[in-house]
Length: 184
Image (cartoon, rainbow, N blue to C red; front, side):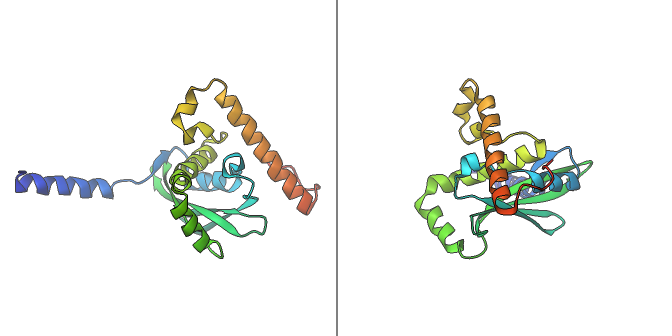
């Protein structure tokens, strides 16, 4: 049986670690992180054809909400990034949240009936945020580490990201015209 001093010390250590910095560190300012999250295309090559767009909001200085939208601009899921300044960089913690609006109950039911998809959402959200901040294509292998061993996976990621961007650009142009300035 563990001594009372050992139990108290272990509990204190756990509490202190829980109070430490949360999220992954990026050597970018909070404003640079917010900018990267605003412009990054959603990985529709992974999320599926139901996702037709996104809405990025910033309810407060330390929170960025990326909502995946369907063709009616109704939210399907939310990726919530919590930003904490850390020296010259930023710590970013990522969570998945149910959508606001009519799909909220549907999301809860789908999460219960499709546990595998629900379990993959946090990894998908984290990789979307990582790729956006790092300025690189979404890494499809992040969903399955064994896929990193597949030759040519980096090229497949790049091609899938390019196709996803083209699909989103085509959808935008078909709805709003093609005389807008080219995206950066």
